[in-house]
Structure formats: structure tokens, C-alpha cells
Image (cartoon, rainbow, N blue to C red; front, side, top):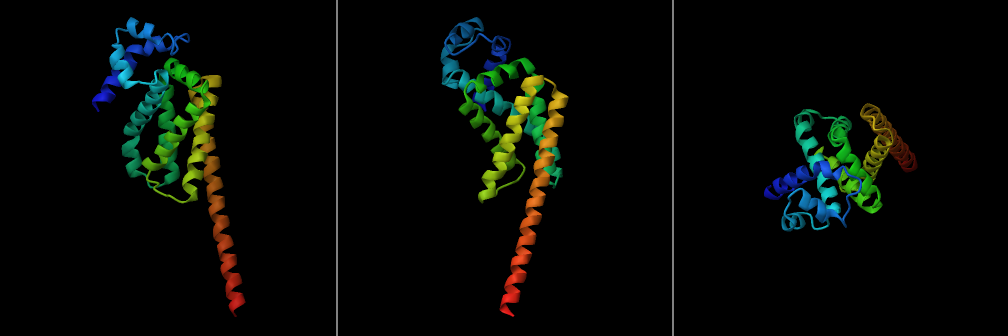
Length: 204
């Protein structure tokens, strides 16, 4: 918790400066000096420089969104609605500080593996935090679907910077994949029924 507080203080001090597109790992020390941030403290908390800052920014935003939506999650029984609540709240929180968010999106998009790793981890955390503890094959399928929803939403917002349009786009994606899941479940149930019926006839 102490480290979280220190990290948060540093990112607040760097807030305005990080919106400067010219900041990068090579000139970071200049900005640390400008913000009067101890380099020793910074590198002990963010050893991979802007990569570490990016990971913290995404994770911090997710944790704040989860905290604000927690009471609604506890009352809601539907997994689909829980997913919708937390995804929308996370995106709202992330895009609230649009300039800072643009910086971290642009930076992570230059490192596709980093962006994918961060978004997949958030997708995995969402499933865990809404109460999904499955460890079967669907464990990975559901996370990949949610990963793609989040990824597409970030791309959509980055293109038009319209929060309301992005949230509508995200809701439509969630609804589409939710219906897909229902059809899949119905299909499996019907297949199971037919298979059971076939076995019964065979045994007569």
C-alpha cells in the first residue's frame, strides 16, 4: 500500500509532463529533474521506466473502477450484467483524463506485446472479480473474448475521442458476445439431448 501511494504521487507530479508527446525513456531523467522527483525513488518503483508507468496507470485505473462499482457487483447476480458494469466503469475512468490516457495508449501501442499483456491481464481480472473461477477451456475463451472487446474499445476511442460513442460501441460488443454465448449453450444442450436420445434407442 505504501508503494502504491508513492507511485500515485509520482504519476500525479508527472501528469502534465506525460502529456508531452516528446517524453520517452531516453529523456525521462530530464523530466524527473523538472518535476523534482528523486531518480532513486522513481527507478526503485518503476524499474522499466515508462513501461512500468504504463502498467501502473492501467492497473490503478482498473482498481479505482472496481472499487467504485463494487456495491453494484455484490447485488447483481447476472454475470453478463456484472461484466457490463465493470467494463463500462473501467473505460469511463480510463478516458476521464483523456490527455494522459492518450499518452499511455500511444506509448503501449508502439509496443504491441506490452499493450496485449496489459489488456489481457485486465480482462482476466474482470472475470475473476465478477466471480468466475472456472479453470476449464472456457476460462481462456472468455478472457480472449473480453480482451478483444477491451482492445477494440481502446482503438475505437483513440480514433474518435468520443466517450459516449465508445461506450455504446462497447455495450454492443458485450451484448453480441453475450447472445453468442447463449446460442452456444443452447446448441450444446440440444446436442446432448439428441445424443442421450440416440443412446436410449440403441439400448432398446
